[in-house]
Length: 385
Ligand SMILES: Cc1cc2nc3c(=O)[nH]c(=O)nc-3n(C[C@H](O)[C@H](O)[C@H](O)COP(=O)(O)OP(=O)(O)OC[C@H]3O[C@@H](n4cnc5c(N)ncnc54)[C@H](O)[C@@H]3O)c2cc1C
Image 1 (cartoon, rainbow, N blue to C red):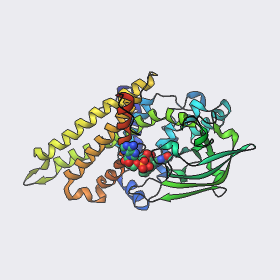
Image 2 (cartoon, helix red, strand yellow):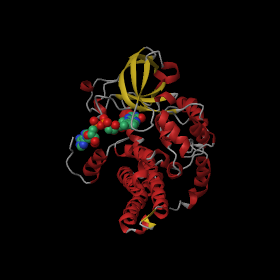
Image 3 (cartoon, rainbow, N blue to C red):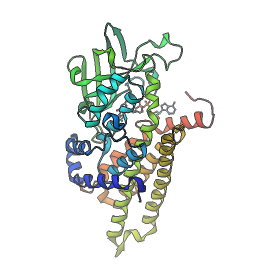
Image 4 (spheres, rainbow, N blue to C red):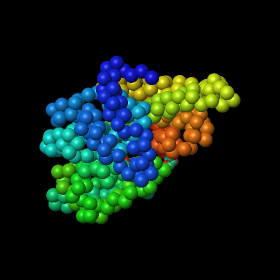
């Protein structure tokens, strides 16, 4: 379980920070379904959430692999970066497509953490994975756009100042391609809640602060349109490879955490007068899941390498996300089995992490949709939908 030599120092710092947030901290939050404010503040103050923001805007301008190493280390330490991982990468849309005034107005404040941009309003109850079928509309009215509709699974909406919103600005039957006519907005939620914006948390199997969000004639200033009207879908797609690689890195971190737990318990637990790990029926599944994890990690690294070199990383980012999510799940499953009954006891943290890591085979993209990408875009098989 070695780190890249070029990110080893940063990982050491992350580990030290995470050590201040042990299992008991996460267990209590999980019970209450509360937000890990102290943990997120500590990461923000240490500058770990702004590593991808260029130095000219107050970030540290590090490559994607550094952000991946940070998120992997957070998860491997038993913490949960899902409370704030979007703060690391969502600003990429502003950076790549926002105008100079927007970048200057928001990026430095996102870099310091004064502004949190970690709510992503894409999924809707009626459209699901079929994003271009979304029904939320933004209609131009003078200097504003007026937004109506609903989003679902908007994570961290209650703990974000800004939301990146995808809405339809031209009806689907008036555009040539269904991917046209969608636009991206930066919505200032601080001003909007109670004035056209309603947020309703959804209780889920893990502590994730994910929400339903309702828009009722919400006025968004036209200057908050990101880039050009009608090109929002492409802007969102542009950010997907980075997001996939970073989520994959988190899965790898989870996998290491589970493996370490499994190994420690298998050495320590004595049954029939010997450590359970002496039985190959116990040690082989741990070793197999670990092998799966290391292979997935190589794909994450290759995806980051291509991304950083400016090459197309679509294939690698998608495959890395799928393999890493499957590997973390394999490690989780083995960890529960290795712990026997104690795998179900809250105080071991295994059951909590088990619930948390399951998400990544569904969100931010489900495994079937990755397979469908690989089949169509990599292998040239006929489009399935
Ligand atoms: C905890 C959580 C947090 C989330 N956070 C966010 C967020 O912050 N912002 C946001 O916008 N979204 C978020 N999401 C939404 C997430 O991205 C979607 O749940 C995910 O993309 C799957 O979409 P869906 O739930 O609508 O499933 P559906 O699209 O309804 O699909 C259901 C199942 O059918 C399969 N399926 C559908 N179509 C096909 C096909 N053509 N071929 C094969 N299989 C198919 C899917 O793979 C899936 O397994 C979150 C979801 C969860 C659960």
